[in-house]
Length: 68
Image (cartoon, one colour):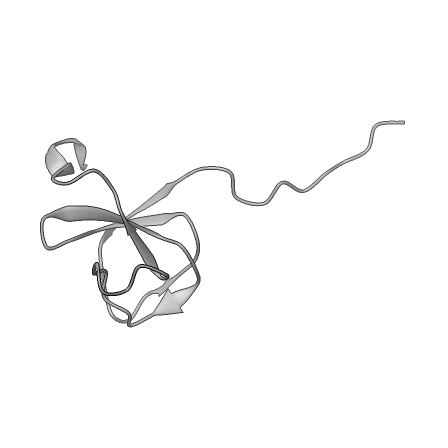
């Protein structure tokens, strides 16, 4: 009998422009200040910044030429 395993989120989810009102979860990707950032932990109203390395991961800057 096959067993079902929940892998959770396994890929990045593009969320658009960062908003202080949005609740983000790990692997959500936002654009902010000309860069793309990936959430490392669940957070709300924590702006992406290199001063928040435990919360946000800067993706290769500047990389918004591919942003939809």
